[in-house]
Image (cartoon, rainbow, N blue to C red; front, side, top):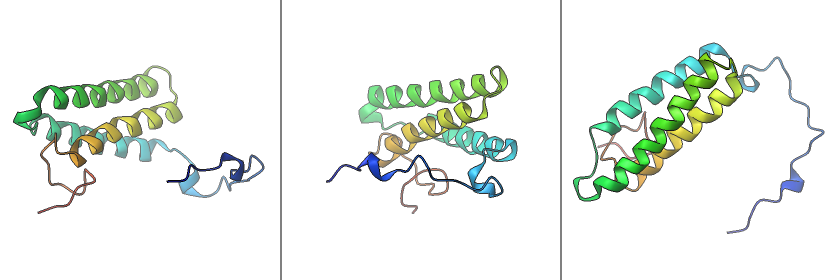
Length: 115
């Protein structure tokens, strides 16, 4: 697989501040907190019994990033870092779901096929 050439990313690119998809809003951030919490709660009860230690490790990473996101939002008032930490948290959850250490089938919360 070819790596992406970062020279293709223009620092001169201008994004419209009017577009709602170019802003991290409180409403969006709170929605992401909710969905990530829901996914954490589901994954907590769905560890693969044959890979408990790996599941615990992935879950701990997700939980730590979720906690970081709350800290950035509540204490630092930094919505961008909170959003980034939530994405890392959910990335750990999705990775665990994809490799089967979280035995979940909810394709709304995880990047898995539903039954």
